[in-house]
Image 1: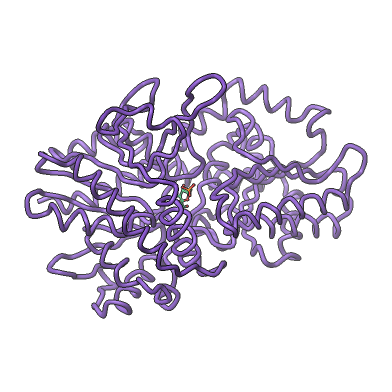
Image 2: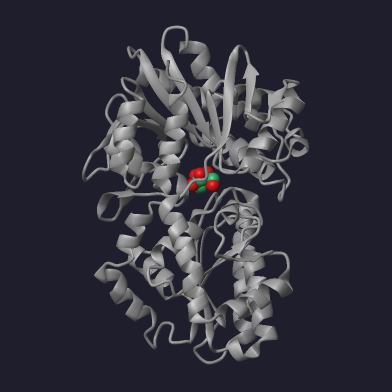
Length: 493
Ligand code: F6P
């Protein structure tokens, strides 16, 4: 399976006659006011990037929360618009929430309760009744939007995404399943914690009941599936089948299965070769930008799970321990701001600017400083130029469901000259065997790994990168999509 056209054919053959609906909190296109009029933007993050090519190929409807400040001006009476705006291929149906609703649903329960809980409580989750009430209420808004989109239709395949929508599957099934043929599936894009951590959640049973309304539940890794089944056993006192990876509930068998998400390798490989990227590669190396021998790169959504602070500590130690790299090595970190209303994220932003300031001041020499911190999403040519020029890309989460930056870097490293350094706590580590693996908490080991990577012979770099590229090319996003769709299709009678 190598292209969106292949997946299109698969969806048509497997889901014949079923309306195809994707549901997520994050929308793939936002309409924003700018001084030049309304412009369309795409969000940071892997979910929308992975699913948009599929929707463009298959058509159908994507139900998502409207979050652009011009979104309401760009929809019809049913709150729909066709996207991508320049070449419409599918319907985007927007769900509206007030600021208070967003506060409780998105900034509250989703990102201050479930997010830290599922990332093994690296920040203490907030267990707040009003967040929970807001989460239920907003899930009902999504369920209502889905009902509107399935009205008068007798068959639909509804694919829920992520931890924002744990309750919506049950709401949809309760209301409509007797009249319609529905296949409900959910992909959980973040880790599932151990059963003891999940049991901390005061509403653990309701969350699981909501999810068990699905026919299929997907996670990135087998270990997350095992943790989920163990949570079901622990909280709901139902026996799970660990051999078949399923559980029986209310007369249905719910399949739980790993599907490691990936990127569109061929598309990224192609973009990385365009003339604009090549020009930008020259600019990156120009005397007024980065004329130094070694370049490292990091690209993240600013989140405490991404291990950005740990990465900077390791860079500090590396320069201290191996002073010959001072004035010779520059690390470019591009951080896209995220979830800024949440105190933990505000604190992290401050912490990042403090540590960058401290390290840069410590080593500052003339024009050279070790860290270039760019706040925001990089222009595509600049991003791909950095991926192609960098000696090392450091992806060092302290906990991450998968991490698509790692796979994006591999697909863009067309010259096989760079090395991927990957945290042992990223889901991607299970697959990406040619990466240099680090423990982000082991400052000494991490610093040594940076040095060893920069000194790695070109032949070894090429060998590793070739393995990685072969792997990501084969296990691309279309494989993820087709595996998920084939498994879902088993529920079509
Ligand atoms: O990693 C989990 C996830 O929800 C992704 O699916 C998504 O791409 C990313 O986080 C972005 O999060 P948000 O929608 O909060 O910006």
